[in-house]
Amino acid sequence: MTDPIVTSFFDESTNTFSYVVRDPASRACAIVDSVLDFDYAAGRTGVHSAGAIVDFIEREGLAVEWILETHVHADHLSAAPYLYDKLGGKTGIGARITEVQEIFGKVFNTGTEFARDGSQFDRLFEEGDTFSIGTLNGRVLHTPGHTPACLTYVIGDVAFIGDTLFMPDYGTARCDFPGGDARTMYRSIQRVLSLPPKTRLFLCHDYKTPGREEYQYETSVAEQRAHNVHVHEGVSEDEFVRMRTARDASLGMPKLIIPSVQVNMRAGHMPPPEDNGQIYLKIPLNLLGQE
Image (cartoon, rainbow, N blue to C red):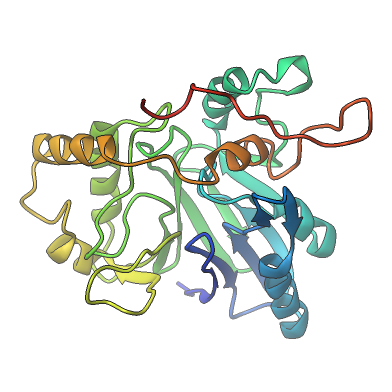
């Protein structure tokens, strides 16, 4: 089986890694978890991060077949529409995006203008679905817990795991967003860790830890099984749930959750403009997070 060539792109302002996944036997590639720059204070978007991906793909002469999301991100805005306009490709996300859209459609009171059927995306992936990038074969694992729609994309000897696991010294992702569940997350993580030990795992985020000065984005199943501080071999489901629930109760909301979810549940598109031609994002007061 041919294994992909993976190139990473890091947006330090959101601690996000995006990837270009390339078929070594052709020009075909996919983009995973892109970032649209967003200055919250000014309400202004930018394409510096996504532009680096465009420049790379054009320089390498690649052809984009997929623009993939591992889930509806709560910490950065997707640049999928910009990348599609520049490079083409089909958008994909987990089929349970409809649950996320239903939950947050109510949170943001989007009304009938907002379709809750996932139709903003070209492909809604179910557990076990397959796809291709040139001659590469990919398959989909449904790995909910952080959100209901989280996916892991397995392509050759690599897996893009979104917000399930972080680097072994940092642990695992939170499970306290609407639709999240720590017990479900534990079971999803076990599915990822049942992949072959040498499987290379590519993370969506890294936050460093005391004593580690460099950001990292790649680990392996074997490393996670042996060393993940939250869920290494020997940690039971009940132990994980107790730890994760207590830890989540101490966390504040991500600083970009409100703009991110409004945009990402629309496949990276902004809400429609209002009658003055201006686009607005809503802030629901006293609704998200804890008092």
